[in-house]
Image (cartoon, rainbow, N blue to C red; front, side, top):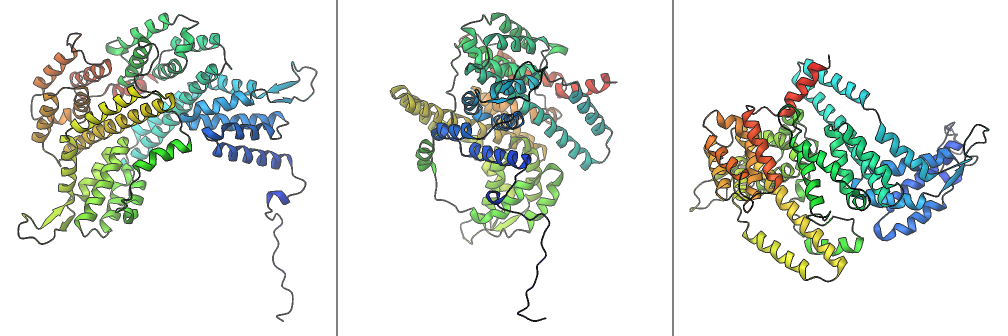
Length: 549
């Protein structure tokens, strides 16, 4: 073949072309391009650029019902999947509400056009009134499949699949009710419609409806009470949380109801300021003080990558990969301990899996630098992990309390409204981080005991320490600890003296009375002990499977 001879390359029948170069676009191409532009705008929206991008949305060519419905669905799904920004998306919907498109001419049609607002409200109504019969049947079927499965790994996979299914349904349901509440606050839904929603949710007070009701009342309670008397609804809620025996609702929902009752009694003023989305300038201001140049663990990306893939059924596989890493110094070993500890704190649902991993990694040993005064020549993963847990458990909170008092004084003295809101948000985040770390640490300690990496004697020391200063933080930690290890501990020692103290605490007089949330937590752990450490939801799920036939 001559080098000068032209070589004909293979040509595709449907080659890719840049969008601007495409000619004779079909209707599908137009819709795809429109939705791409809409997604692009959503991804750029921020508090300080809100008006600019809403203007860009309004200028888009939306000339058919199908296109308008597509845009409605996109913004609805974004609001459901990003609940922290529901308010911003609903404000956007208020601006887009008047957008109108003509409907196909039809003599039987009752109207000739339709608006963004009517399509959005229709979507919310459909989701709100959705019949959950099919979902319930599907769930019962999956529960039966799990019950019949004999393969342990397969059973764990089915449980995780069911949990993810439940999470998605719950997220969509809660997201929809938040959108409805914010639509009311933006005057796109009337108070009468809100009243019908509240009545509808109370007619069938299952746990899903009660959670949705609490979310709705948190958003609209203050404005609704200016026009309607909410006393009958709150009387029903109070009756529900006081139920006992068979009809008693689960602790999480009782806490939510108690919180909404407390919020109303406090004239709808939250105990902590709301965490609103911040502008870029505010975020930069905050991170400029909190960023740290210390990146000593960046070289351990392999470890982080393994942790991100861990699931309960794959613990052994990934532990093997971790053991193969070159961990030959105390600094490296301490870094791995810190990484797995922080992952367990930040992902409390997977504490058990991470502690199982720790049990396998416990024997890993590294040599210490030679020193005549040193009492030992090597150190293990187990000893470093237990030291970390002990330090967090015994941490003196005096400095944290001083810091909190200082922040409260700063808030009190501040006269700038925006700055004051920023300080409140900072304080709330500070409190949340401390609480999350404290509760996460106690969960790790409990699971370490179950994996026989900590003795029962150490657990009794922990319980005595927490009861010695029975403030609300220690009582919450104690309830978490007893929920995890109560059953195994009671096999070796009588826990009655500790529970006698707990019963006295929840029956204290008005002056020393602890908050309702902590009282309910203590009552739940007392009920758990009386029920021989079998959680109520396990009994309920077995009953549901029996009655489904």
